[in-house]
Image 1 (spheres, helix red, strand yellow):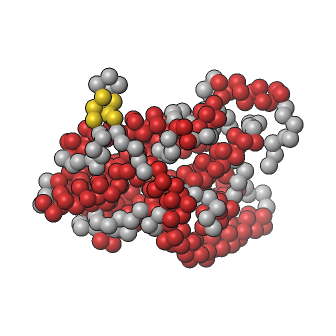
Image 2 (cartoon, rainbow, N blue to C red):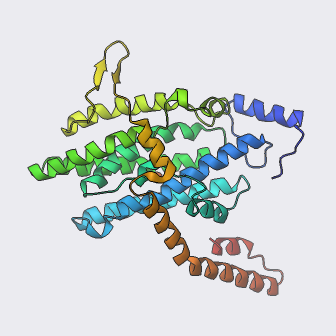
Image 3 (tube, rainbow, N blue to C red):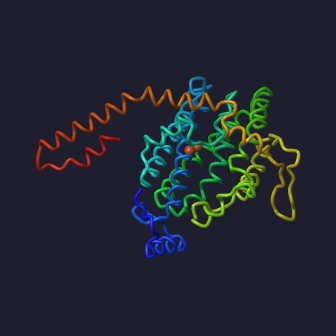
Length: 332
Ligand SMILES: [Fe+2]
Ligand SMILES: [Fe+2]
C-alpha cells in the first residue's frame, strides 16, 4: 500500500490533530499502516456480517405467514444487502478490492459476526432477530457514526436509520404473536431463550479479554468498550421484554439501584470461542451457501464487465463526447 515506510512527521502530526479534534480522516489522508489495517479488518468483517446475516432470515422468506410479513421481511433482507454494499465500498477506499474480501470470506480467512451461525427454527425467530440482533447492532453501530474514518462514519448514518426499522418490525411481529395463542407465546419465549445469550456475545469478549480495544479507542474508531455497550443493550432491552411479556433467560438479572443499571449474568464465553473457531451450529452451511451464491453469480459479474468495456469502446470511438459518468454507472 502507499503509506511510506518512514513515518513522515508533518503527516503524522496532521493525522493526530484531525483525530484529536473529532474530525474525519479521508481516503487520501496519510494514516498509520496499523490504522488502515484495523479499519480494513473491521469494515470487511462488518460487510460480511450484513451479507451472511441475510441467510438466517432468508430461510423464512418463502414461508412467511402472510403477504404483509413477506413484504416486510423481503425489504429487510434487501436493506442488509445494501448495508453490505455500502461497507464494501467504504473498505475499497482503503485500497482493498471487494473481490479479494469476498474471497477471504468464502475461504474462511475473514470472519463475520458469530450470531449468524445460529439456526432460525420458527417464524418467531424473525421477530427476535429484529428485536435483539438488530437491537444489539444498533447499540454497536450508533457510536460508529462518529468514527474517525469518514467513509465508514458516513455509511453508518444511513445504515443505523435502516436498522431502527429492522428493530421495530421485529418488535411489532413479537407483539402480534404475544397477543395470539398460547402456542404462539411459547414460540416467542423459546426464541428469546435461544437468542438472548448469543445477542449479548455480539458485543465481543469482556473488556479484560479484548486487547485491541484501547488502540481502537485511541484512534476513535471505537467509542465505547464492549462491556459498556453490552450494559447499554441490557438496560435498553429489559423494559422492552417486560412490556412484551417475555422472560429473559438469566436468573442473575436484577435492578441495581446504586448503579442505576441492570446487573446480569456472565455469557458462556467458551461457546463464543467455539463458534468463532467455526464450530457453531451453522458455520459450514453459511459459508458454503455464500460460496455457491458467489459462484452462481459469476455470469452477472462477467456480463457487467463486458458491458462496461463495450460502453468504453463506444465512448472512445465516439471521440469528443464524454460519457465517463455513464460508463462508471454501468459498471456497478
Ligand atoms: Fe444491517
Ligand atoms: Fe438489520
